[in-house]
Length: 89
Image 1 (tube, rainbow, N blue to C red):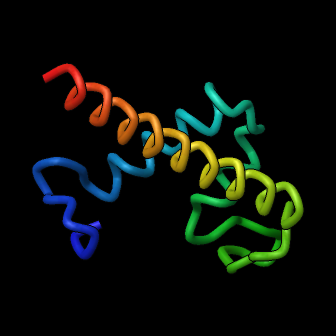
Image 2 (image 1 turned 30 degrees about the vertical axis):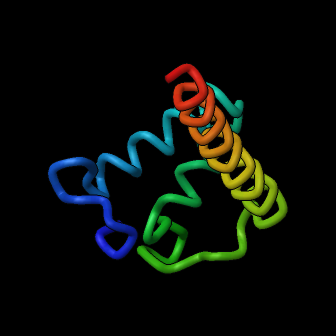
């Protein structure tokens, strides 16, 4: 986030994760187990802590595309709002 120009006092990595988790669940309606699997660094399995990147791949792909579309929509609305505000001046 720092490379995108987002300062530490504006958003932290943990804060971004919390916001994403909440929006994916409450606004976009994804199952919490799929969200947690995508956001987790490692998932418990019968062999202990191991990386498992293959579970729910199709659902996670759809979720991440919906997330990207949601962010694009927010950006478009923000830009439209700025243009409308400038036109009122």
